[in-house]
Amino acid sequence: MHEIDTIYIDGRFVTPHGTELFDLHNPATGAVTGRVRLADEEDAQAAIATAKRAFPAFSRTAKAERIALLHRLGDAVAARRDDLLDAVIEEYGAPASRAAFMVDHPVNAFRETAELLADYPFVRRMGTAEVSMEPLGVAGLITPWNSNAGFICGKLATALAAGCTAVIKPSEMSARQTRIVTEALHEAGLPPGLFNIVTGRGERVGAAISSHPDVAKISFTGSTATGKAILRAAVDSLKRVTLELGGKSPTIVLDDADLSRAIPLAVGAAFMNSGQACIAGTRLLAPRSRLAEIEALAKAAVEAVRAGDPRDPATTVGPMVSRTQWERVQRYIRVGVEEGAVLLAGGEGRPDGEGEGQGGWFVRPTLFTGVRNDMTIAREEVFGPVLSIIAYEDEEEAVAIANDTVYGLQAYVLAGDTARARRVAGRIVAGRVLINSLAHDPKAPFGGFKQSGIGREYGSFGLDAFLEPKSLLGEGV
Image: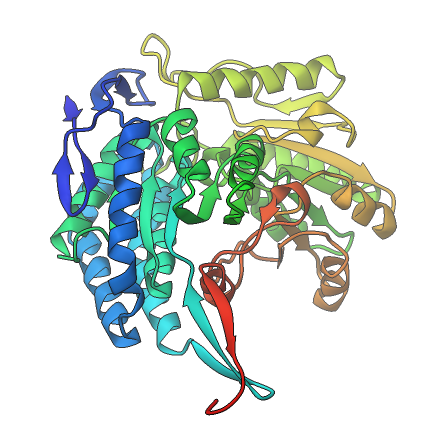
């Protein structure tokens, strides 16, 4: 049993003021694997005060000092790779095939940010003015459970690169990952107060951070509903806010696509991270002229997906993170059937032999066709391995359907003619559009249009978000 009874404030592991105990589970079995003692509002306030005290000195550090600091942090997390890998599989249920990326990403985040920082121009000449990019102050970093270590390290790396100090509120469901990351970051030997980590509930710790007048910046990844609440809480002190929220990403298969390549990509886009991904391509837009081919190939591909034991190398879809999430996905599958979508593969319940009698939160990889874009499963974020095929008549209709959503985070275009695919991609309202690929580039900005968020992360745009320009004009400038 993992007993986690400390948080991290001012360079020390301390017992939280909060007393609530929260059970941790192995989602592959449903068994309780430990408990975490949750922080409360008082702990959040203590962490913010510490970060505020540390900010003046840290904000004046030289670029070279911050670069060295980022490399120390990356090396420290890399030294705990095996422990973190085990936690990501046991605590989150990430398949081993996915978990390797999920533990390398936090390390790479520090190193990539150090590389970015080396070339970042903090002072710029604009007309007769000298413009300096100044760190905002204390940054509140709020991270989700579906890639906890990656989001902690990615957001922290950017905040520190900018010269901000940080208070991090990770998901309480990922407490074991958080403890390993915190221990690693502590070993890097940073000055006290530069980062503080307070695991607690969003409605208590997250709300306290979002509304506190001494927090200058919020960076949040999570649901659109929670993002809106954070934005409201930030209004009184006019905090700078970056929100990376939900998605309902379209995958447009054009009629000239090589389906033997396109359909496996489309299924991979839908089921990445066991479907628990804001960028999952859960709407497969298929040309009606090739609909039967696409249905047959997609059905075969989904039925071949292995959902089960996350430690089995053949598994590509692990369990849902919690019983609540499992029940949510079951409800969406049921609603899809009730609203008239045609079930081609999967459906309600658990995959055969997985989780029966154990309580494991496995979902059958599910494929619908006959889906209209006004159906619930086409409008709302399911956050599980459920893919909907939506037919279209021509390219114009494909673009219209793709953009007919409140979201705009990511999209995919699969085609034979890449020039045509680029033209279609240019018409999609989304922060990222991938062409014949599932690629990620940490130098490219990431974030959404519409209700998928505000602002961008990664690369120079992500660093800009923790800085404010200050202009100097007149004599001696």
